[in-house]
Image (tube, rainbow, N blue to C red):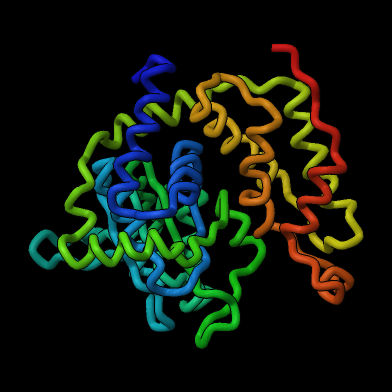
Length: 317
């Protein structure tokens, strides 16, 4: 898989395999895979029952990743995520009992239903890729990916994630309801078989690590660096935005744009790669001003205006 053409072929095969289980959500499948290739974590905000869990399990099976699922409720403790130590009377020592995070792919369901302390434990793990329990650090398996889901803010029992924690997610997506034809296909499929049974393991963790390294090596022109920086700066100077994009957000956009370039068959980024994932990487990181809320403006509308106002660089290929 070291060859660039083989890498592109492998990425497209993964997408085709996931499509067997997740019907009518091709764009969401592609964007989640791009985030995984860019070593990012994904937040999906949507109502129950639209296929978020099936999506995560499909990626786990297709990529032969060890996975865990944790259903967040108010009584879930940080140790359920990180693990804990227990005294072993036979050896006279303390043994580490891993938590749910000790896996390659963690599905964190309804993350906004649990306590702030438990949310912080998970998001610290996402940032560092390791857990520290009773002063001893344990490395998480590589690759480590979190696909978290949350119910729309305002649902019963939910509390909004703080901005600093939202910033840890590379992208935030919404799956939405399927269209009528896709829903008919889902009904037919579910009545006859479990869609996950038709997903084959066509790669493993080592293959994914190789693909992630290929993405890291995608070339970024100086003009592209400047373009990303200007897009981030424009959010900080916009009167409709109270809190703009942090450097972490700009890095996230650059990383996922590299993965987009690879998917499109190139080993260098062009401005279209940036605009493709721009709103998904930025919208959840900004806080709107009161003026924007009064005028019923959404982050997506404001980001669209910024994208139009910042001139795209002209690259000589």
